[in-house]
Image: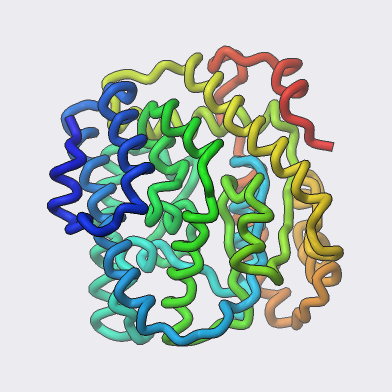
Length: 363
């Protein structure tokens, strides 16, 4: 059992009333629906406490920030497992594109200078977290490889507001997932903006490079905080992405739960991404002209460098030969990982191709 009062006391949250709604929903869902193992209960509670302690520190640090505007972001969106990570990592080879790194999200404060002993010590602590992850979820790297110094998804920033699909990946929390589909996500992006503002205190990047599949359907909310944002939307056949999403979620949950109901997981996953995709389709027509580019997964695999050039042309970004060479050097490994076959099917999760295509368009 996870107790709200204990979390509030341990994290000194008495005055943070804006947090109570998502905290209530998440804890109730974890206690009543997740069927966590004793280790899972400890791990999830520990994660929540760490996220909220970071929130408290960021709240204090933001009061001292005097940055009028966060650098322009380029944001990769699309259903999970649609090539977003491959493109994200490829774009990260451009030094003009700055992404938060895994270790920075785990322990962002105090801000450290680059290449110092204290920075290395913090990276080592993140390595220890990842080594524990490898023991709990040994097959996760086959689906989504993480290193301490690699760029990572914004879902690790949105935990600051407890509005992150990370918690659904960790445990069966359908009530919490419904909350994510209907809540005011601007609260989450307010914390996202605070995080990036603080990261800029050491060095302001030319651009932020960001990614999180759950940015899908939150375009207008993002523009409230980043009005000059550019979006790259990768589309892939959802009949291929859905079983991959479910497989990733099942692998994560097996490290924390007593059992995993694959059919129920398939149903809940399809419903969430159907709502997100529908909202995205509605919002994208109202975006500023030239801020949104839709590309195909097949084009990314067939000619990733040409696709990058198309993205840069569309958004009027400069790219030099050295950066293109770095990207080309990355392509072989990244393309091989993207093409690696995995053993799962829609039927494993109680889904049918016609049903998925009916609810998730990808034209």
